[in-house]
Image 1 (cartoon, one colour):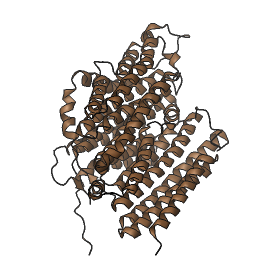
Image 2 (cartoon, rainbow over the protein chains, first blue to last red):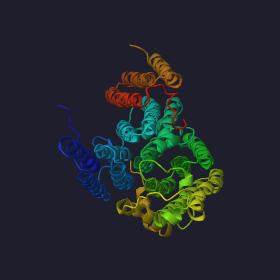
Image 3 (cartoon, helix red, strand yellow):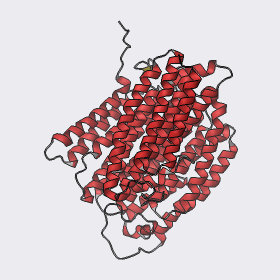
Image 4 (cartoon, each protein chain N blue to C red):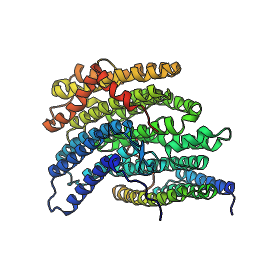
Length: 484
Length: 100
């Protein structure tokens, strides 16, 4: 008789609920003769709420740090990351429902299960305690996102989907090769086990270093850090805007959650070896993202380059390689998720049907045509630029502070200079909206209230976290302690 | 018993062939096949390490990789078919509505 490991399913309950909700919506779409979007949305939101509740219930959990034979980590980092991802998914679903409602497209009932499955992968990856689980979760989320990217009749979406798929699968192969090397170097795929094995070794760490390099490439693609960023602008521009909003905000949180575990637990003994690599990736992303964004004339592409720069800022926090850095990175990820979700949401509302009016020129005079949308966009732009009193400012102060305290003041300097350059293209949008006349004749506008209500969530959080950051910092203090 | 370094070198060559294929091929299906080659190089690695370390984890992981690779091909070919219906080509150089 083989000994059966003790099964404690509570720490994966959020994932079980999400996958269950995904299957329910899938069956509803397949079996109901006339499936309606409202029912889909209701089912999905109930699932998301239940999953959020189940993850918050894990906050005070005591007991083994890992469950299910060391596959799942039950710590507070996972709880915080899960809650962010689930809230982003909820807003994404609301935006998506409106998007497909007004497009007059086919029913697109598969949107809901796909978003739910992608969310499952994202929450699973931040709770993974074994590199096998990291890989599986990465594929669950990626495969769903490849399909979501192509969910539109436009040729651009298909093209974006293919590019995302080919480069994403290519990156997964690199990631996998790194995992295989880590397994070869240490004889285990457990995230904590690798750290124990590496800490005991002296000399002969070539395999572990190769593993580190390949894992850095794989993660670099997923978080879109320069020089692995080529897919980002194309995919963000080509994908349907609500999908872009969901993917840009949530995937980054998920990938960084896993990266934090791999760097700060597995490869903690080799911190002095990976620090320069992350340093270089951070500096390159910040500079290239900020500079190339200036040259863009399409607002979705501009936001894509801005997301590359923001990946660099999060990496800046991670160069600290300590609890301080993790806390700063987490705060940045929350602020980033809210700002990005919000700004892509506004972009969706400004482009009336499908993907028209995504050029920067169509934002001129928005302040007069749609004061509410312009106000929201201005708030998100100021926050992305890192201007107080918004969450973006506090987040930037946090990551730069963490980097400086760890002795990387040069990197902080690069970051600050790039932020100044980046402020140009963010403020350009604000100037266009408020200081220019509307171009062209009067066109129909999207004035539906539901998506505006959904956008209130990121807008309020952006402001509140900018004025009262200590509300969240206490929580993040506890979340940034990695138990292993 | 095959020695581990031989397995590692073979797998590295297979992986490199896959990387070359992804970068050099212009046909989307061939790029997909090259990616499969890379995944199989990883499987060779995992099984080789598993035998050398006398631990089962590597073999189990290889099974997972095979299953995921199959799912990935399913999605990939579906996307390629969709692209062909839209554009009448699967050459990745001619797919250029968005700036590459």
